[in-house]
Length: 605
Ligand code: AGP
Image 1 (tube, rainbow, N blue to C red):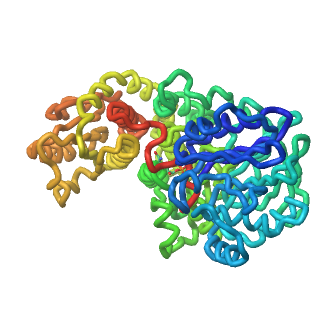
Image 2 (image 1 turned 120 degrees about the vertical axis):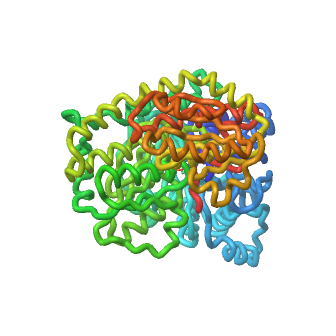
């Protein structure tokens, strides 16, 4: 998963591309590169490391009116200068940037090598530049079209040629790519934030679309060359919404954006006091459903775990929640009257997309819950409910998770209403509580300093445990993921009752245990487990509802949550865990927004 940025026009290409790449670094940041046309030649600069390394290598920004750039997240070949994109052909007259994986690159490389092509990198991408070289006669467009015929795998790519410095060719299959439309200049990018502030008019490319970009014209065809007519998508996002807005990191900003994101996602979902999603056009695919599969990855999977409890409890439909990378390779016993719900912030996660396609192949309707309009998941699903979290830049997902949870509740309540599985009074009560849940999140955010102090105290620990029962266990899993991914502290989430079946052996003097205690009906059970870990020397931090404070007195520290209906607690109880992880990362000097080895959007399996 990588970021692509391209520019052609009368302006200066380099600053535009560098700026665009800086907005795409969330897609990958182990190396960066740029190719510009200057003095009749292509000039490539590429460097291992963050974009700033490449910018330093560029020195004074050279003048050019055409260029393509790339931020990389390695798949084939270690992060290094030579594996960074763009990749050139043997003569340095053709250059390519690519996001995706060329699955048949090994055999192509063997053939090309036998034909005399000299490879400079270990990447799969480099076969593209050599293939274009091989097919090039006098038209870059034709050479790229011929190249696409022999490629297998996924790609968003941009190609330039020194002999035709007035065009950029681009093509898309299974990796995202957009075209930004300017006046006398045009842009290519992996994602909209890269061009926000320059234009708000974009084409969102579909699979099998091929683009010839000049400064005054954008021609889109399918791979066979048939013209494709597309509607211009007007982006309404405020460009500053994609910036840090005064916070030190995107993650902290996004944690604080949760009340607004919840309000935005809630908008238009309540009619006459009840949750009603009929306007979202989902009723036909939900009608008569007897089984639901919820499939996702990482944080989105954790939202799906909560979704299972909610939908089963409210709508009385059996739900199976699974990890996409597992689900796609197991022999699923498809229920004949089932619905698939896929959850994905980016809408581009390869495994989730593969499951979506598998469900459709099996005749199962798919409802997507995603944050990105026009993403692959949104386009391919039968129906979509958007989380209106706005762009999430930090690799660690926060506001996307809480809005995904909210959508799970909305779905559960909507299904319960149309299926009449719960009394209307109960549904109205839950709808009213959901409608003001943003205030509960605000209350927790106001305890940021206290949580920061806890992180300061525990910053030196090696291992942590997150415990909970029921919904609290699902949130514990998300808390542990958050802590490990950004602070690199080992964190294990356990169902509290499972501890004594093994992991209790790991509890030792001073090991911090974060205990989620929001489920009134399970508080005594969880407290018994807490006594067990305390007896082995653990230090217990309780994240508990105010009304349970007394029951949790034996815990060493307490973070108090507003006294909310236990069923809705996850949306609030995750917030202190997000803040704790954030400050643990800060105190340990980690790169909060761009944790090592990770990327925001996982478009390879
Ligand atoms: C979240 O903090 C993670 N970075 C990661 O688990 C993420 O949720 C996962 O990769 C799924 O992404 P998606 O929601 O874009 O599909």
